[in-house]
Image (cartoon, rainbow, N blue to C red; front, side):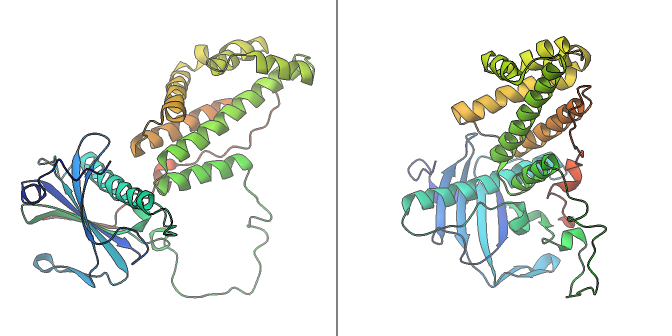
Length: 334
């Protein structure tokens, strides 16, 4: 939460702390008047966020000159960070995520303070960043230029309208499955900064597939639809994944997931606890946790797709590392 009382602002700003500059695409689309705002992060680190506009962003020493006429600039002082390994991708990602977290926290706070203002701006995420620069003691340590949407994928510029309609290789002729569509949505949520929503949506898909595969096994054993539904409902909610995957499925003639694939099973149970913490205790989920969860869900869906019950899962394993908006096209250490 934002706390204006427990920080000596002028003293903190001049201290030996890490500073991040975020150049965000879009001018006037983000709430909060220009000014300096202290914020406490969920993991107890304090930050001071400054929001302002500028027509250009210049580092004369190394020749950076970026047109920011259509941008909003946020300066984040990481008050409790005085040490940073500039060669560590992990440290760089943590600093980036902390900056995005406090910027979005500030935006959410302002929206709550002004609920009738008609503000509809969404969260700020990596695709919105044009440049991220990090410095300390008035010295630039490193900076990133982020690719824009489209240019990152190598999409050519210009307007070229083809003469023919591509029926053969098109969504019309080769539609994706609902499962693949759900996984694409989870990736889009993750790239948009909605980590909890991405995780929960994908877990719901896995939960659904576990139940459908179990039902297919029970049907193969000769149970009627009503008896199957009654049995599924009778299983207690807290341990239902264990009962489905380790008790019912073996009774239907397939391997218990716990016995034959214990690593994915153990990971799934951990993710189930995480899901319950999010849903019932409003726990925070960070980006690296969401990415790990995506990989685990991939493993579970892949295992379920091998079921012997003639329940077809149209599944395409997505290379999550290639789909994340995290690759930076330019970095320079100073």
